[in-house]
Length: 112
Image 1 (cartoon, rainbow, N blue to C red):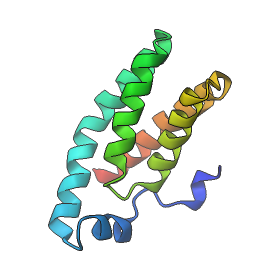
Image 2: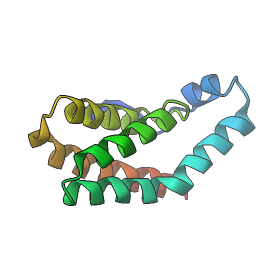
Image 3: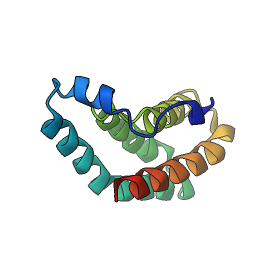
Image 4: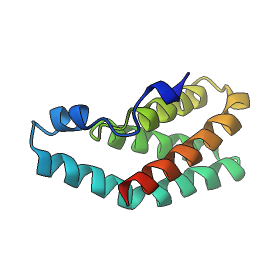
């Protein structure tokens, strides 16, 4: 999975998902960005606690939110994490979580 080929923010996709309403697309993205650090921190904490059931719920919730925002890198990562949790492929998760943390930081820096 080469995330670098995907944009951090895909404004065309975000607009399409928001019914071509720029103000709504921006508002949806801003709402996600406000909660993203807490949600990613909670996912990391569940990983550290080895609470995979809780982590799976958190990842699923974030994946749902990302479906409406035009954030292809984060959506791809969170989908991979969710898939690995569902199939009990735990050995990939440290790398995926590190990538999730890095992509989150990149998005937050791009939004400021």
